[in-house]
Length: 493
Image 1 (cartoon, helix red, strand yellow):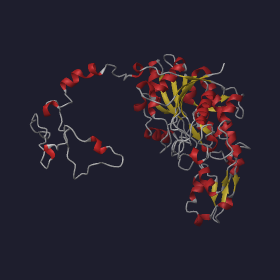
Image 2: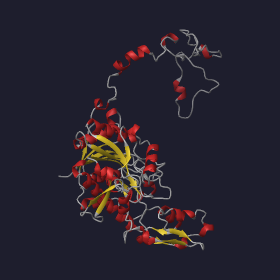
Image 3: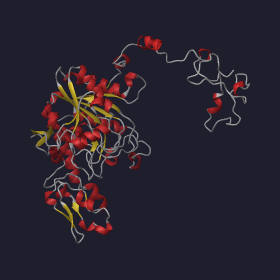
Image 4: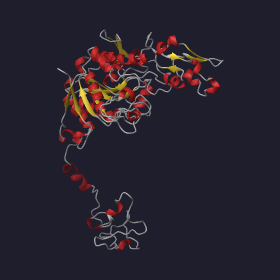
């Protein structure tokens, strides 16, 4: 029997069809509420967004899930992990930087209603090693310790593109995002004799223009946290490539200068390894204790780990939930494939904006030749999940389910005494009308798309019979000001 993926589209016209409400509705429909028993510590894994990225999920999604988990008797925490350096100006590579960035992006205990933590500690070495003999490429994974220690894991994912992973879905959220820093080196092929950057990349030091020709030459040395690049006194660029651990801090510095030519094998190997590492997380927590909620909105072409967010490549797709990470990623990829591309986005620029076109191979990948299916297919091979799935359209749960929970009383009960004590409407003024306003104006005059039909000089409010309002026919209006004694009936007549 194929695994089920529960789905609600992105359209909203009521409280129970808001995207927040839909995230909770599919959570329950998929049976993820059944994963939580009273007293369980529940990790909610998110991507909190890089510094100055903007497409990451709003914290309210995590807050809504945390509230639901507390209703079920669970004790939630929201988490992300430290990253590799990825570039010379990383903003989440230590716990201090991660928490600083997360708070700037709105991920705080105040907004979430529960703690936000760095799941792999200050440097990223707080982890739990898992054997994965089933792995296609990796045979071990290093899972962030707080995630491995949790009783239940809810993987809350923003579906989007990814430069190296091609898609950023549930598998990537676990296979990279739930790994410790030590685990990320593993997934990114650090030290691998064939697929690692040190082994695979084509190094062209002759492309270095020298200190005079490259004002930012010092960055060539400073991009590597292990000090493996050196510019010599005679303007030669040296690289101790045998010691490279694929931290990826150099790619954004070397590639634009032509000093590096990336090797596709590094990317392909990483994409396969993501599925292996995701399996490691599932094994660490327990296959029957991991659930997935994916919000496919603001489908940016690159990951939230970039310090920017481009125009989404497809419209909002909706929200998905499942107990199968492979199936939920496939469902998202299918939805994006059948959606039209957004005009002016990278999908249009790359010529994949027609419904039916695969979007991420060209609009997501950093280099040509990668496949949006590599990680998903690897997940199938290693037994992590199934591409074949049943997509179940979920109906709204009803408005009563999502009324304002802090005070569920209807407004008549809630405000009658309050408004009697502190009246918000000044009914004692202007014959009970409350405010100094004209009885009627020509509203049609200010509606035309090519501009108003009356000018500022000729304008005068009018009565229904076309006569000019006396109070504005060159006469000064009698206006009540705060602090003055109220004059009932004064409205300019």
